[in-house]
Image 1 (tube, one colour):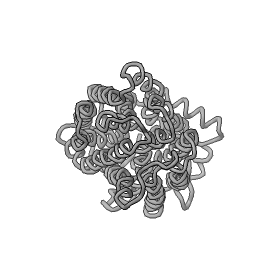
Image 2: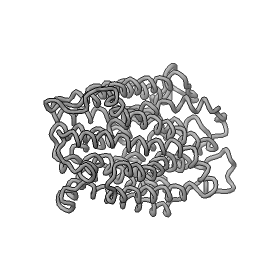
Image 3: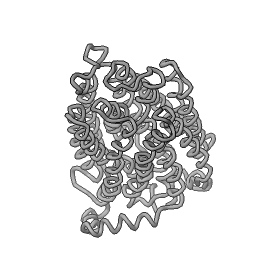
Image 4: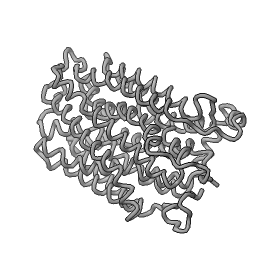
Length: 446
């Protein structure tokens, strides 16, 4: 059983400090999500192949997430603690990748750097989810994940707007000799600095409670064979709530992956009426996608603190269902919009869905997990973020080419339908803590 009575309530600023690292981590994800397809296209990628080139990111996550979760569960350093060594190592490598990405000399170099970037982000990000379970009792866990969502939203807003900001400052937004525009390069440099600084803020401002027997952790971790065996066995022992949430996550992330891959080319075709990645119009569309993504991330930052209040009145499951349906309908609506200003409206609905995706599944899940395997199971849970991305990478290009005639805006519609389905599937999820009315406020079953 997971005993959370011994965990003291943390102050607002303690929760703030332990979440600041996510502000930096989202700089990396936001720059990746809003600019990777633009970089690939600028370096010569065919729109039909974009999803395939993005496969580097989820495949990396598939390998990295459960291993890092397992290792962080079974690590302890007298100075660095359990999760913070992984925060630091991931931040250092991710910052290096952010510098390399806009300096890619070829398409395949960009794909390789994406692989490095995503692996590094996962190293620092994965233990952050378990950090909430480590430090907060059940009465504060939803607030802890909401604070992470707020930090994610704030970081993503700034990062998404950086290319437009550098454009306004006079830097070139046009590719020269097939290279990446200055606006994108300097955005990634700023992102590297923000990523490392924010993660180190959390590393130095937050502490961790030592385990009862630190020496036993190394023995429990064992060798590589033991670790792999433990990881594989865990898949057959997933709590029922985790299995139910995994199905919802699967269809939610197909929608998100479609949005991140195809929004630039979709609106460039549908609103700017161009498919030429070397044209000024296409690059203008790329900057506007940054603005659109800033809007949905800004909405998610604000919604992060409203969703827990709504969940108290309705339920966490009900809030998540409503947000996913609204987000899915919003993605579908992009097909019908011909004005770039009106494209900001559906981003409000997407922002609500994004806030809920980053908050509610984890708040529901943490109550069903054993405390000594929190990091590992969070890593396994993220398989159901990674697997739909792999499925998307393998299938969305085929749908785009053979069913949608190369019009990637229709792939966004498909993504919207997938998110609506995810919302409906929330009806199958059992929230153990919320459904156990007699449980004390400070206790979590599991």
